[in-house]
Image (cartoon, rainbow, N blue to C red; front, side):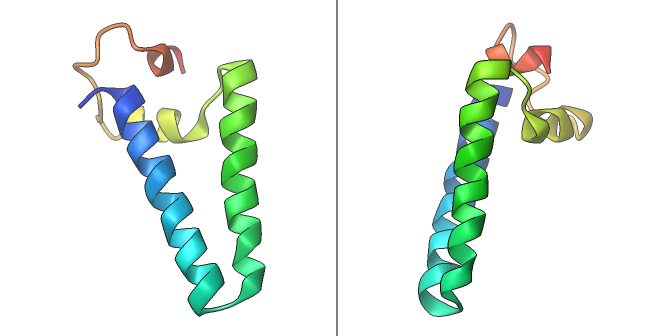
Length: 72
């Protein structure tokens, strides 16, 4: 799995988890969804992806070639 794919899978999973928490636990968890969306937007403009940096340090996506998140 490339680093880009891992970041997309992580973001999608976090959005679904935050929506489930909003529905079942508290409406205030919608702010987690907003935070995730904001991070996705800012990373598209700046190229800085905190999740990619953490995943890269954990060794995820080392065989990813020249994927866009590899510059993080």
